[in-house]
Length: 196
Ligand code: ADP
Image 1 (cartoon, rainbow, N blue to C red):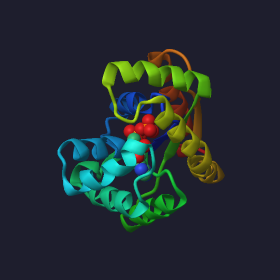
Image 2: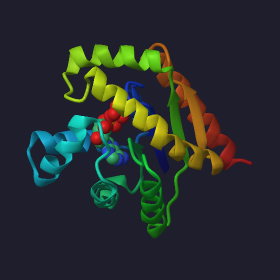
Image 3: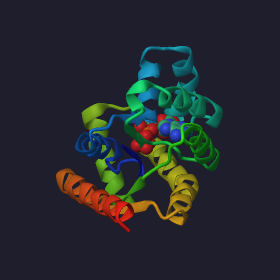
């Protein structure tokens, strides 16, 4: 049973790495950004509400995001473990996740932080904008998302570092090399925790 988080700035390839890491550990990924985008494209009530924030590169309000995650984490397919991608991003979201996990008698095993220089993140976003056409991949919205990451999510990283479960990974370079580095780092970390 492995319960993981992945945190990384926009353009860090967080979604791509999440899928590969989850495959390795045989656990499903839960990506809040992806869930929001699906709801936006289906024009569900949540999607209509969330679209206002996604289009501007702002965070969806905590109460909406927390309710969504709480609901999803109770699903049977996630009981053997999961990899959360893009959540938590704020201090109230950390508290909510702590509460949800504690109510199930669970805790996080490790938090993967992908690091890459801003200049590389911007280059990747511009490439992705051409390939995927995500509405929030314009230079202005991207810079806003990056700024929010530095301001808000930095705190999330600090909290997990304080708990001693942060695994920082160099997220620059070739995606498959990053995957190999990330998996090796998490495996090593989990091994040291299991056998002190
Ligand atoms: P990225 O991290 O590359 O910006 P994501 O797919 O993780 O992309 O998120 C896309 C958007 O979805 C965010 O800009 C935000 O509007 C919304 N979102 C995703 N996760 C959260 C969260 N935990 N809290 C608030 N908003 C979120």
